[in-house]
Length: 224
Ligand SMILES: [Zn+2]
Image (cartoon, rainbow, N blue to C red; front, side, top):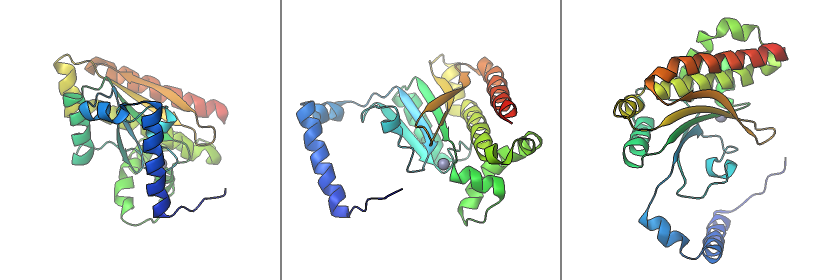
């Protein structure tokens, strides 16, 4: 793949052009954004530069609230992710929280192969927990598909974690409509797939989790 090298000056110039083009195409775009931010969706995705949230779903600034970290992990003690979730649910009143993983994720690969990658290993430990939960099944997946299989299992587990956060549990108990989803993005084809973990109430979580897990396992078992 060829990579274009941009200087920082280029980035600032690009920005000027983008702002001018946006305003020309839609006069008042920025003044409207200034007045309100009402996204319907919270995207929790991987920090990988090849997975730019807004672009993949063709949404404009103001339409998607985004949190990204290495390997799209949702941990109950991560104040950063929890704060984003709380703001999105309590204040912005997003209707959907979408945990989005992607194929061939470097963080997931490192977790699968116990790679020595420094400080980030401590973070990836959460993905290794997922690996350990499903180790027996993963061992039966053909080697070439194992990273992608763990990417999908990780989405299912992290989406379930999102369901179990106080933020989402509290929203559900006060009757607020918010639905948690798990998606995976194919780096090779640019397509998003719904892993069918769809939970809109506390009672939905375990059936949705089991269904999504069974789907992932069936997909990779029949492929092998
Ligand atoms: Zn990734």
